Length: 306
Image (cartoon, rainbow, N blue to C red):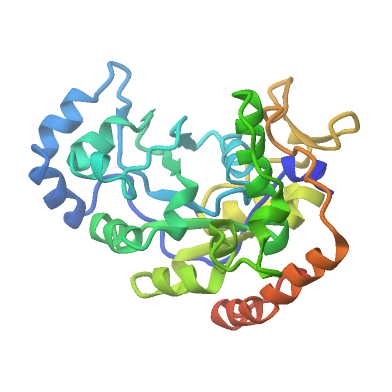
């Protein structure tokens, strides 16, 4: 199951199409960082392509499958994706440099292409929703979520392997999850899985129809239908096909096939989770039961979570 996590993930909702050129509010913000004309001229290419502010952002969640989602979405010819996580809205040292700096981090794209960036930390960062709204209140947001308990285990696994690679010791997951015989609710990984808390913050600034929630667990099992939903949400023509996905039996998850070239996600994705005592796992499931119900009520749909 953990090995499958490497695979897919995506989506729902249908807002209006956002123009590829910066809206009036964006232009004003860009002038504060310089001038819109200078920013675009500096970022222009001889073939007519230019750097554009994103019209779509994958806002999270961490260890929810954001990289898989971005890679799958990049199969579409009308999508230009930023290669790295930009961390513009959540890191003060980046945000203080203004939208001119943010624009410079975007890929070159044609006027018909949709520019997309993904930074998973956005979803759980309190300041980010208002900042994104200030840039473009009509932006389309993608949020990919997994079973909250599984996401906690993936969160721990990533940090654990980061320490292993650096040959540094790291406590067992039980040491993080349990304190004084009880579930440690101060563990940051637990907080990141309280989806209703973070979603409430986003809904203060964006209507639900502007946020497409991708079911990460379904994308793992069968990515193509989920990607089709994302295409519809983003008003993209149906260009991604079932033939773009194939199940890699060795890795245990779906990989991508693009123009005859096969590629899978990095080996760091889909790592096996640590063995957890069943009683502790049940405590984790019980802890998320009520928060999950609140999230389902908030977004008007349910997910197949414990």
